[in-house]
Image 1 (cartoon, rainbow, N blue to C red):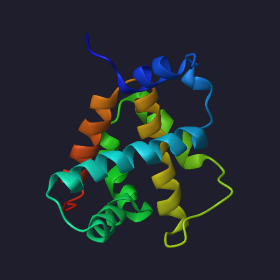
Image 2 (cartoon, rainbow, N blue to C red; image 1 turned 135 degrees about the horizontal axis):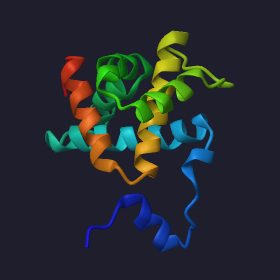
Image 3 (tube, helix red, strand yellow; image 1 turned 120 degrees about the horizontal axis):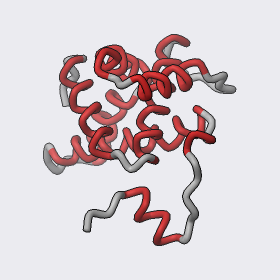
Amino acid sequence: MEMKIDSYIKEQFGINNVDIRTYSPLALAYIGDGIFDLVIRSLIVGKGNTKASQLHYQTSHIVKAETQAKIIEALEPELTEEEADIYRRGRNAKSPTMAKNASMADYRKATGFEALMGYLYLKDEFPRVVELTKLGIERANITI
């Protein structure tokens, strides 16, 4: 039997399922940031063992707002209607903070992208997270 990541974590810690449609876009972006970071870290480490500082350097250049904005711009034509709606909700959310080294437009797009990643993860659609990440990296010509 295949166990989904989010469902497995909830089961192990006795956490009840919640209707994810009730989560704020910023809550979705919060978990999505971690999920996207995990996927990218897995890719970077998978390329070979190296110094932790080099791993961090490579990862941080991909998970930054500017790169996430490029990824979501490349992905927009491929999103389902539901995914596009989640992205827009995240992009349009009023955040009390802003990235230090990003334009407001890139920061908002990145927040929308992270909200989408979080939404898909919480829906137990991790394969779609990976599919979109792979496609976005390819279409945005990002080197890993």
